[in-house]
Image (cartoon, rainbow, N blue to C red; front, side, top):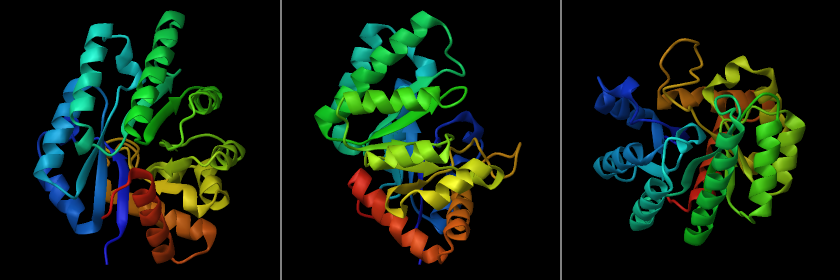
Length: 260
């Protein structure tokens, strides 16, 4: 029985323009569900169209990736928030949203990114939806800062997508009741393997971030590669892979309020 889930990918991205339907059809043979994340307004519109075509398999979390914040006016962001509000019954979360100190380095842009991040957290709270967090930078600064912000804003439901921090930080996040999601690139990361081993299975999720972070470097990633994350979790925890599948499916349904 198929029980594996990709909680974060980007099926709308140009890397799939040539064969998107085939990619989804192939994924449906192996997965129970995928969540495609909108990174800006147009992208989220496409994601919702895709979900409508693949109801019950493709789910959507619309967000505003930190690298796209500075190119949007307040008015455009306001209109986007209205669009999200109008479609709140068709989405399962808000994200990806957060901080990116790898690409956003200008202090004024960072300040605005934080303000918009908090605004979108407020939106998620208003709609009682979980948030998908993008927190990237050198070291663990962005993750630590993001954790502080979600705590300050009293966010109850959050997943730290594509977690790249140290196991101790992952444990701290889980102590607050938040989820950690590990990508298919876990096969190349000692730190991610340690996280898979140490944090509670009840707060662990699986993703690809496809078309990025493929288990094989330089290769386009696809949702079904999430299988390697389950396998790695099972190896690290010395459990049967089906135990991981069942538990992670429960985690998914609990966080996103979706029954598969």
